[in-house]
Length: 266
Ligand SMILES: Nc1ncnc2c1ncn2[C@@H]1O[C@H](COP(=O)(O)OP(=O)(O)OP(=O)(O)O)[C@@H](O)[C@H]1O
Ligand SMILES: [Mg+2]
Image 1 (cartoon, protein in one colour):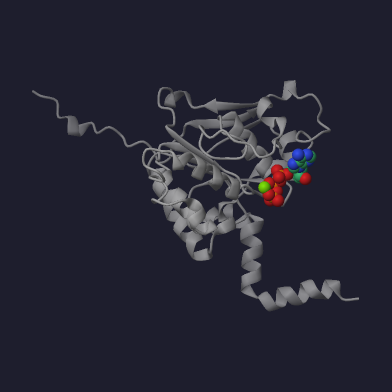
Image 2 (tube, protein in one colour):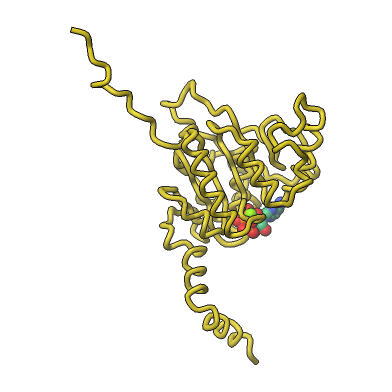
């Protein structure tokens, strides 16, 4: 009797790419814990940081080390420190830290042979020079700006160019690293970004995102790490400062401002 294959359906892989399972600091090779970047608590206490197969967020105060970590991961994966896809080679100023030389990216053994086929690193501060680089590359491409909506990104606003990147350039089945992607975006567009993130996750992508946005952080089932004075710790969405403080503020802005301004009164 023939075997009825439909009785043994192949299980759907869980959403996300799951290419990278963790980030590990080779602690034994660190030359000096008192100098940047090793003196930042998020690095000083780092050993092995598991990554979510779909979306991992880094949150924390300004200066807590989010960009330092993200940039080191990006360089480790072969990106230029100033951003772009892996084949972008440009540098306006060599400022990246040496942390990448002390990191190991742990790949999921089950995903061996199924490596990501796309990737992009978006730095917080260098969107403009990155888009200039896109123009330089794309002008000579067989179909100029074919993956950028047909026209140069500098012909769009900052937010429009970022959304074009998300909707046109990113192909899925990739590892995407974004540093404060909300910088360019209205609240409405941040909501739109959530749907694009979801589409990328369904296209088997993995994302690591540093953000201050309580909207982006709401992406369901993500792993959120807070960079704080004690190092990196997983935190629940409702307990992030971004969420808590925004909630308190929106609940009663006048009262909060009265409190803030009273602290400044002579
Ligand atoms: N090249 C550098 N040399 C020395 N210290 C640095 C250097 N770059 C950053 N730092 C310091 O390292 C710390 C972490 O910086 P980082 O940019 O990673 O913070 P961040 O969490 O991304 O902050 P933000 O939310 O403001 O983007 C900060 O105290 C910063 O002043
Ligand atoms: Mg930063």
